[in-house]
Image 1 (cartoon, rainbow, N blue to C red):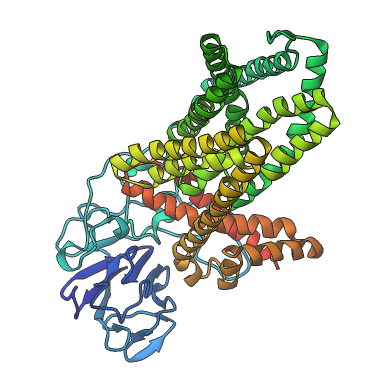
Image 2: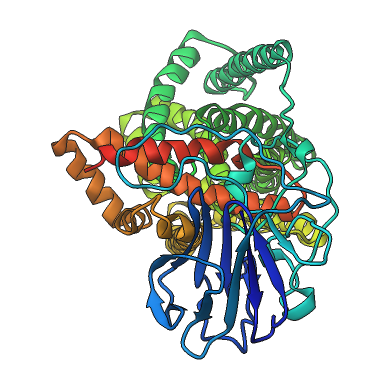
Length: 572
């Protein structure tokens, strides 16, 4: 069957739209298939209602609109449509007529791919045979519909902005279903070809990565051991005392680091990055960045000393100028490499903060091995002082600095402006260097008193600002999830109260804690994560489609739908 909706009044008067499968979303919002004028037709809500094609007919559902959806003079929640029906989108709102008949072929028929078969649930939910919306405009060639959040905001004839079709990378076999509530229309069939990476190449890359990590681990350990074994004349040697000191300092530094990682992992709870990728980021900071910084800073210090014969000048140049530039450069390079080579996992500003924070913690942890080792050699009292100063008062100092680069990379990732994508990581790096230089400068020139001053003037305020900004990013992410899942809530895939819990840090945490006593903690944790990741996958797909790019969400979206259906009956 084919439904034809004729707009009879308003800015779209005279326009006809067809639906044969899936959904047709209607409202003022940017993601709606039929979008009313957002300025002059405000009687309609942003996501006013939608029409769904089911096996037994077409159904009109009001999406909790402010002014209601009126069918043949009566306000309805859900109703089956018939030919001749008259729909009004809010009292005194736009009017449309309905005609239903047999489907007719077009020059570009909607192709139906094999659907993902989700586990069958015994509670009411959406139809398991979701199909893409076949939305076309009468008397015009059928073309894919661009998501309206990336099309020019206007009304009338230029509401739809077709884009040329071209193949994409890494699509999902059920991608059409993942786009049906985003208003993106159909995609070309060649989009659905998944290119598999050769297994042999993958294993070689894993083996190479393991080899490099082990090699650099030994090199860094020997460098630290040599530094802790330094002879009276300042030259580097390697002694048993230095090796044992490095081992003890490693335990003192790495055990707290596991707890420092917890806040970053919690921030990323909706769309957690793969553990192997976070481990790779940590290894970059702990090995590559440390190795590069150690060599350069030592070389700079020795060079300045050989010229000036002034140890204080050498330490000042090395600590205030060289360290901020090259330490932030080596850490920032790791974040940029993640952005470039693991782009499908690097989606937004929050990901930039997470990756930068993990890289910085890796660097800070190994740096602490060196400081704690020196404290051990000088006695228990000095070790205790260093633990308080570095492990308690400023464990996130490097995270604060490098997060500037991460935020810049995150803004770059979200932007489609070429200048912004190039300039923002550079600006973030400059901010990171400035903060690091100020921190080191005040602490170096002022001694212990300078550390206290820099702590209260720089570290603590910027750390609190960072927390505030992170909370803002989380709230922004929650809003994205709510907006993206509005259609899924309206059609029953996700209950409203479950979405409210999933997008509230307090409610979700309390719900999980209560699950420890009711025996369904595992189900609730998996369910909340699936809801969050599903909402973000819509957003990732929306942005990737607009940029003609790729994201891992193409593959994950249909899997996440199945996860929601799988865990939903087990959470109560």
